[in-house]
Image 1: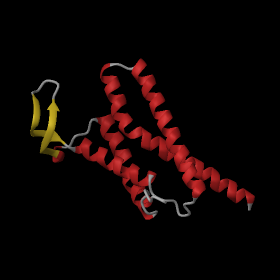
Image 2: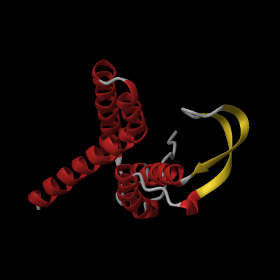
Image 3: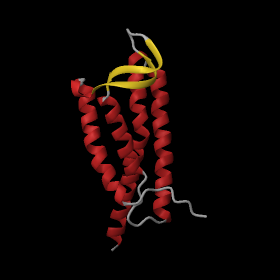
Image 4: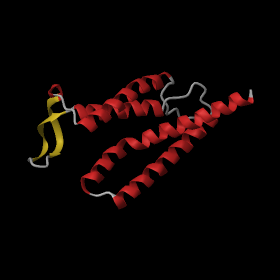
Length: 158
């Protein structure tokens, strides 16, 4: 029984169109702490605990939602890029996909273990924020690297 768990190939291009600008803009926002008032909103929160504010559970809060929008776009773009079929999806591509996912998981959690031992306080909080995205990013890099090596090998044989 074959289970189809991948998006159609056309979604990969959409994923790249979403991922690349949102990664660049997300890093820019992070580095410059850019928060335009246009994104200030009154939003529902299951739990909100501000550093010098009150703790709210199941209530409305005022927040600049730009970071959340960028995070959602990065995750959606990464998922579309990572889990869209290749043009010629075969068993070997599936093997590369699985090996890349396992490698990305090992690599990601190795970095997390390293961070647990050597980073503390708010620095560790930033590590955890980045860790939300890194497993998909590592997978995308590794998978595309292996696919590029495969295509180069095939072109060298011809």
